[in-house]
Length: 195
Ligand SMILES: C[S@@+](CC[C@H](N)C(=O)[O-])C[C@H]1O[C@@H](n2cnc3c(N)ncnc32)[C@H](O)[C@@H]1O
Image 1 (cartoon, rainbow, N blue to C red):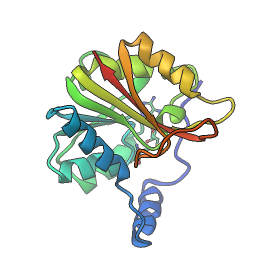
Image 2 (tube, rainbow, N blue to C red):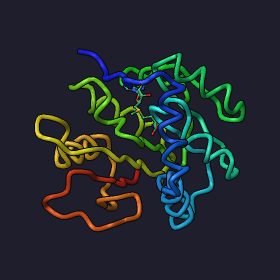
Image 3 (cartoon, protein in one colour):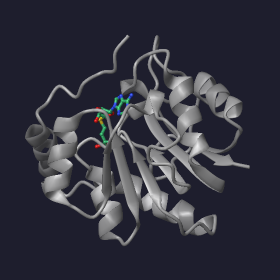
Image 4 (cartoon, rainbow, N blue to C red):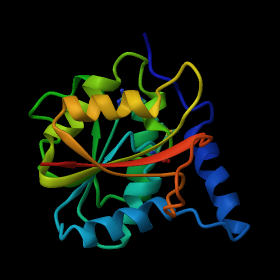
């Protein structure tokens, strides 16, 4: 049982996003939504970028003034993140086995953007969600966006993991721009809240 690896070098991964940005595409939709949700929920605390990779989301959050911790199990990706921006706290760790002393928080939000929930090893999703939920302050948000494919993590299964971790469902969207989710959706952005 192993996690999926990004099949690009750290530089190639970043170059792909930079090329997309150069076309005029909005590449910070995740951060826009995270910021909006924090504001709507009256949350002002730090954010955990779970499965941060090369820091695409964490760096943008830091640039907008948020305290951020980025966690990833791939040290090469974290090295690239550190070079880009020393402000976030960068932690090498496996989200499935995160001990209570590692990036303990509490966080106002934990963000699993860029398909992290289907990159973690199959069968560890419940532990990952539990570990993220445990780091949220009361009222804190778990925000995850991932592709929904046959044989991978489904929305119902993800919601069950959240419920088991004591999280309440707040919203499901089809995109980070809050487009409504319908039955044919192949991508979900799920927002859950710690009671
Ligand atoms: C597609 S990348 C997304 C990176 C980043 N969130 C983004 O949106 O640009 C998925 C990331 O999840 C990380 N990952 C997978 N399983 C993990 C685990 N068990 N613990 C921590 N990170 C994990 C990978 O190393 C990779 O950086």
